[in-house]
Every structure is written in C-alpha cells, then in structure tokens.
Image (cartoon, rainbow, N blue to C red):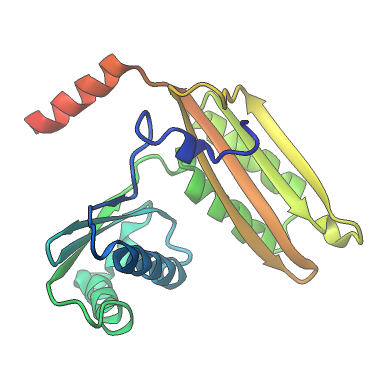
Length: 225
C-alpha cells in the first residue's frame, strides 16, 4: 500500500492539510480548473525560486494565493517590483474573468532541506546540469539528515548516465514508516529533462511522529498569536 498511495494524500486530515481551502456546489469544476491553472503558471514563472507550496483560499469572489518559498527575495524583487509584476501577469493570463479581487502572500520556508518539494527541485536542477546522479543523491541525503530529518529516501529512474536500458536506483537513510498515519512524511516527485530523455525523481522525508496533543498545542499557540 505504501508504494501505491501518495504519502501526502494518504495523510490528509490527520497530519497533512489541503492545499486549496474553499467549498462550492455550483462552480466546483470551474474553481478546480482555475486552481490548476494558477499553480501551473506560478510553477513555470517561479522556476528556480524554490517554491515549496502554493496554497489557495477563496471567500465569495476573493482569492488569497499563498506562496511558500525559501527564496522570498527572488519572488518579491527590489522594492516589491517582482510581486507587483507577478500580480499583473496573473491577472492578464489566468484571472481575466475574475470579478472580485485577489491577493498574493509570500511566506518564507525556514528549513528548506526538510521540504520534499524544494529538495526534489534541487535534485532535478543538478541532474539537468549533468552532475553525476549518485553524487547528487548522496550529497542531498546528507544535507537532509543534517537538517534534522529522521529518515529520507531519493529515487531516480530513467536512462541514467545515458544507458540504453532504463533503470531505477534509490538511496535512503534512517527510517520511513509509510503505513503509520501519525508519521510526518513529506513527499514530492518531478521530472528532469536531459538530452537522453526524462528522468523521474521522487523524494520522501520523515520528520518524526505527530500526536493529537502536539497538534492541539500548536493550534492553541497560533490562535493566541
């Protein structure tokens, strides 16, 4: 089961939260399509800015787009020029027919080496620069474990080193309990475009277990703030 189910989807409602937070009966398909377009546009536009997550919240005709990145300076730009330009392009390319208003909030990720999406992007960038994949995997795993992870695994698959037959290679350290719901397992996947073809990259990062008491304490602290 751990090999077939996305670890994040498997834990939604327990240790993981939804990326899109809204409810609609009439316009569900319309909003879902719009969310997909927003994410595709931002991932393409902010490639190289180490974007960890794009959260979308809706209320009536208003939209809040929350961009979580480890390089907020690249997104915001000098004097906020980058953020303003991003809003203009979102309005002209994706949100043309939006009747209400929308906001773009940029949040910094404090520990990028513990975020599977950022680690996956880093591995993809290095493989595309033709750095040997084994060196990339070893170096990345060391950085993740030094950052405080209890376990991590990286898998690459495809025509590795230009071989004629595609294969899969993986490297892991520590433990990754995929069947434990209270385990905080972060997961991401992506594709590296090389001259020999596409190489798939998958990353698992285990940060420890989350219990109900800890979740309640964190929620109480957030409410007090």
